[in-house]
Amino acid sequence: MRSRDAVWVAKAAGATLVRDAPPAAVAPDLDLAAPPEAGTDASAPGSDAAPPSAGDAPAGQDGAPAGTGPTRAVIDTHDARLPGALFVGIPGARVDGGSFAPQVLQGGAWGVLVRPEHAEAAAAVGHGVVLTHEDPARALGLLARAWRWHLAATVVGITGSVGKTSTKDLLLSVVAPHKRAVATAANLNTEIGLPLTVLGAEEGTEVLILEMAMRGAGQIAELAEIAEPDVGVITNVAPVHVELLGSLQAVADAKAEILYGLVPGGTAIVPADEPLLAGHRPPGAKLVEVHPDDPLPADLHVAGDVSATVLRNLPAVVAAARAIGIEPAGEVRPEISAMRGQRLHLARDIVVVVDCYNANPMSTTAALDDLATAATGRRVAVLGDMLELGPDEKRLHAELGAHAKLTGVEVLVAVGPLSRHTGTGFGSGVQWVPDAEAAAALVPKLLEPGDTVLLKASRGIGLERVADALQGQDG
Image (cartoon, rainbow, N blue to C red; front, side, top):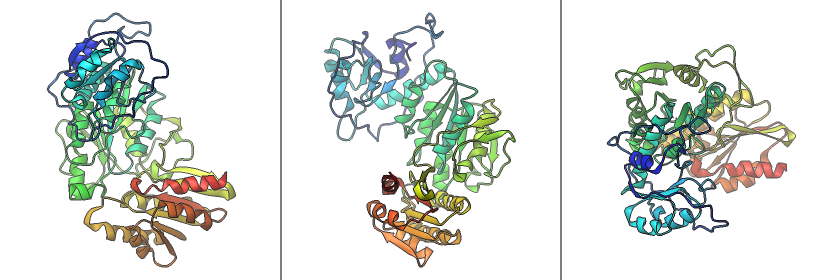
């Protein structure tokens, strides 16, 4: 946002410009307070503020309009990118981030966007821009939407029960050789994280690849209202968050919100033959249905040690790339995000598949199928609880255990209280432990040369501790 100024930022965010002043030099070795906790109940932006015009500012040395705007937006007082950035003080359950406004301005922030009650203390610092809004989180979303249109970038939104992140990673690897692209980093896929991703995109960005997460109805719609995607991808529908939403159809309905947030004439990419999405055909959108077994471009090659589970998302990636005018070709080397199927090659020819960022019956079944085909030695599965499955959770865990037996798993370690039912479905030979700490102590003792080990569980189980234990032993 360097090409903009404080007046543009205020108008875009629907905020009041209390003070327009250049930022001070960065204060050396400033000890800021602990980072504020972002609120989880802030409403996402509505559509009541039109994005401001780009204006006629003179061009800078890089060809972009010259300006005095911030480099990006941040919400963490300890963010290394704070100098030159707009700090947005998000009210949280315990701390209002706006109370840190004076400190971050002293630390070299371009300015602050806070609730009105913090304006006086912020302005008293004597330098830096001060903006106020009754709901800073909402203002953050409005600002992101304005910047999205200023960039004139093509936006691809990605949601789904399984594979959002790996689909985003794959698509970035396909798009990056052709266009300047920015994609969601880490878990910045919420009503706070998505705007931060957009506002971190520099002038000249051509494609924004935005992951969209949800834990309830209406949340994808809020994200789509900010991003206004040209292309919307739903990877699949699975029993994730059923405990929160009530039914699998409700999950599908929530995911389908992205389709109704597309720009006019946008492209909707959905799984083929998914009856739960049959009622969601937004008028005016181009519909593309994909299947994991769809043929791929003959000259597209994914390099690196990428699991077959991740590669099941490739047809959706190809469809998304084509929707934005890119024909996938050549060798691509995706950087798959942490705990989404990375393969660790340890001593004694042991391979560990770290796929424990999340789990549900669909993704875990696919991971077990991948284990069955990829393993050259014993198949070892460390399976933890799958959370938020609703009233069928016991049956779904038992069915997973039966599938593990069917796919040839020879050693099963079940982790967590629900995984007792996984063990029941598996039958004899299962070893049950109460938590990840116990699993980290047990699993290294069970392994033999040539084993392939799958680590799969919901994030709350913390199964990466087992990977840490195995790597520590290996070192």
